[in-house]
Image (cartoon, rainbow, N blue to C red; front, side, top):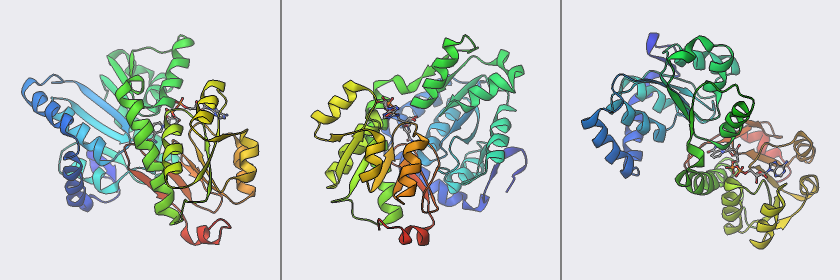
Length: 329
Ligand SMILES: NC(=O)c1ccc[n+]([C@@H]2O[C@H](COP(=O)([O-])OP(=O)(O)OC[C@H]3O[C@@H](n4cnc5c(N)ncnc54)[C@H](O)[C@@H]3O)[C@@H](O)[C@H]2O)c1
């Protein structure tokens, strides 16, 4: 549903429900509340045009409301089509006056149309979760770069892309790597993604994790969180890791560590906390095992998709009948 210049959301009538959930989650965000009070008085972002490509969830909504309270002229699109909460997107437009372009499950064409729609705002600042705004600006929307002061990037993958642009000398404005902040990766990546990934699997499959063999690909911040939560639920956890020090850490933390292709033979559930390799994926697929990933919308072998979004919120789209047919249920 297109709502003229103000955004593109699934159903604007979902707004009251979205508002209720945004207000509920605000209760868990006391620091942001203090910042909002200060911003309302000081107006530090007065006149600044901002565009964000972020997970459209209740938490991001509270961030956006805070930025707007600080004077920002802000609009948003979704950084992951499957984490979008349609009621929140509707509320952002009709309850808070923040133009939002996000529809849960939107296809690739719509995804990039929405990215371009927020860039049409001619931002002075960008906010990314995965570097798609910055990379679009540096490829097809270069005419907008002169008016940009800088940007910020939330996640590990985005920071990796930015570092590579910086190394190649093509990054044309400064970007704050929020992910490098201790209060981001130590908590959001480890505890938020750790919980939401496990939550996604349980809610979508309703299986008992105790006694299952769960393979965690990558023992970085997210991998550590997922492994410890899976272990706490009684799963036998196997870790695969290319960095020898992190692999050793996983051994010392009590997990079995092995090559991904070997783990693909024995696991029941696979959770990728890196960029998965097609070799592992093909092997898991041939065994009809479950596969989830922290940052991509990944087709499930049984015919659905898994995706996880930050801070304990998740989004799953699974064809449940197909899932029940799978051998691991
Ligand atoms: N959806 C979310 O809420 C959310 C939140 C934070 C991070 N992320 C994403 O999760 C992913 C992991 O983030 P992180 O902060 O844990 O990153 P990280 O860099 O701390 O960890 C990634 C780990 O994967 C390992 N690795 C890379 N290739 C490998 C391979 N082929 N086999 C085995 N191990 C391999 C690396 O050595 C590293 O230890 C990133 O894509 C990030 O953007 C998603």
